[in-house]
Every structure is written in structure tokens, then in C-alpha cells.
Amino acid sequence: MLDGKKLYQSLSVFGSLSLALTIPWIVFKVCRAVCLKRNYHALMRKVVVITGASSGLGEALAHEFYKQGCQVVLCARRRQELERVRSDLLRTHPTVPTIPPIIQPLDLSDINSLPSHVEKILAITGRIDILINNGGVSHRGSVIATQPDVDIKIMLVNYFGAVALTKAVLPNMIKNQSGQVVFVSSIQGLVALPERSAYCASKHALQAFSDSLRAEVAAHNISVTVVSPGYIKTELSRNALTGSGAKHGEMDKTTESGYLPEYVASEIGRAVVQKKKEIVVCTFLPRIAIFLRKYLPSVYFSVMVKRAKKAQLK
Ligand SMILES: *[C@@H]1O[C@H](CO)[C@@H](O)[C@H](O)[C@H]1NC(C)=O
Ligand SMILES: *[C@@H]1O[C@H](CO)[C@@H](O)[C@H](O)[C@H]1NC(C)=O
Image (cartoon, rainbow, N blue to C red):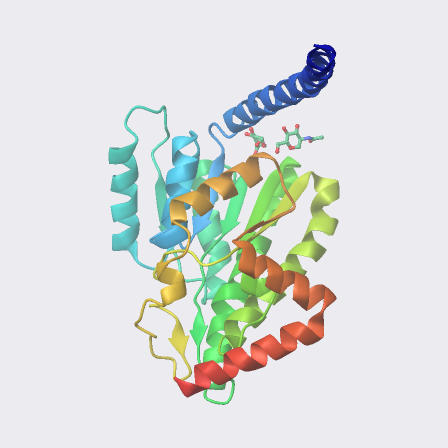
């Protein structure tokens, strides 16, 4: 009887304690959701330039920002594919109040042409609020088997292309004292893998560039977001350049079982809304790799040696 009473008392203490914790937690969650919704609303009518918009993550990003009411500017090499994405956008979200997308074919590796493409965009939209540097190409092959031309090509598209485009867009953002630049890097911008030297190097370079840029443009009210996703189910591995510069042509198993581009695009959307400085979108294993590289490098080095051996045996 006494025990029952004690039990009841401790239960009610426990109950009110957890209530005292739960209510603020719920309030916090609700506030955050309201805030996020308001911030998403702020995306309305923003001009968002997306590179690599003809497929994969870029295409998913186009849908993500278009359905938030942004004016998306789709950039990639293939005009026909951009037109397909544009008509998909117009068809898929007919109920949301949207602004028709614009297409601007461009080749990131032709860095000297990029300023004139930006001028063309500005002539139509008047401003660029958000630039998403997403376009890129991957690499498959050992260092020794990779032609220096391939290293240069990959660096040119993934790194110099993004750098040149950003430089072309920045003056407009500075003039307006507002703007956001997003760089789609990769887990491989944080930890390097064997047989991917050129890709990893280009993404590491992007990370460093972004950190410098972020500090410099903060005074102009411009924010810089770096996104490091793990494997995404796209054509990236199929289109990866091999040592000779040919296309890899296969969908890797890791890519096949990767995240859906729509998921990564919505994570990027949220990071933009919250003006996050960096986000890492990945599963447990890559997180361990990042941790090991930083805090237990010798373990990371020996795991990578094994991985390289396995790749060479194939
Ligand atoms: C400046 O940026 C704000 C916020 O994105 C935008 O609403 C406004 O139209 C921009 N103005 C100019 C002149 O670029
Ligand atoms: C900074 O930019 C945001 C939009 O990105 C704008 O709403 C805000 O007014 C700007 N702040 C200043 C101080 O210009």
C-alpha cells in the first residue's frame, strides 16, 4: 500500500518533470517550424542560378527552388536537356505561384565566356540572389594512369569554372549588399579516396576557396554555403572521366545505392534558407572516415591503402 503510494508519487514527479521538459521542447519545435516556414517564404521571387541543371542533383535543385516560388535560371551545356527540365518544371508544379524558368546554356570549362553569360542573365532578371555552383564531373583511375589533360579538365570544370562564375556574379551581389553563394562539394572534398585523385583534389580546392570567400564577403551581407553530400543516385559515375579522358560508362554500386537527388536537394534548400555555412549530407560510414582523417589519420591512411589494393585487383 505504502509502496504503491510511493510509486504513485515518484511517477507523478517523473510525469511533471518530463512535462516541464516536453513543453519547452514542443514550443521550440513549433517556433522553429514557423521560423523555417517564414524563411522559406523569403525565397519567393528570388533569382536562383543553378549550374549542372540538366540532370541529377542540379535538376532536383531546379525543382526544389522552383516550387518555393524562385525564378530559377538553368545552366548546363546541353540546351535540349535544359529545355526538357524547363518543361518538366512547368508541368509538374502547376498549382504553385511560380515564375517561368530561364535557360542559359553555358560550358563551365570555357571560363572566359562566363562573364558574358552572367550579363545575359542579368539583362533578363536584373539581379542574382542565389548562385548554386553544382555542375561538375568525376574521375575514375589511378594517378599513374591518368593523363595530365584529364586532371586539368576536371579541375577546370569543378574548380575554375565555379570560381570564375562566382567572380562574375559577385559584383551584382555586392552592389545589392545581399546574396548567397552555394558550392556543391562532396564528402570527397573532406576525405580523399584512391582512384579519384582529380575529383577529390578539385573538391578540396573548392572547400578552401569557399572558406576564404565566406570571410571576405561577410561584410557585404553575402553568405557562403558549402554542401558535402555522400553518394547520390545520379549519372555522376557514368559520366566520370577515366584516365584516358573517356567516359567511365558504368553506374557504381555505391552510386546506385546512394541518396535520391530529391532528398539532397531538399537538404540544400533548407541549408540555404537557414544560411548554413556548411552541411554534410551522408550516412554513418563517411562520417567515420571524416573523423578518422582528422583525429586518427594513421588509421585512415591504412584503410585507404587496403581500398587502393582492392581497386587495383579489379
Ligand atoms: C536586392 O536583394 C533583395 C533581396 O534579395 C531583392 O529583393 C532586391 O530586389 C535586390 N535589388 C536589386 C536592385 O538587386
Ligand atoms: C542582408 O540580406 C538579406 C537578404 O539576403 C536582406 O533581407 C537584408 O536586409 C540584408 N541586410 C542588410 C544589412 O543589408
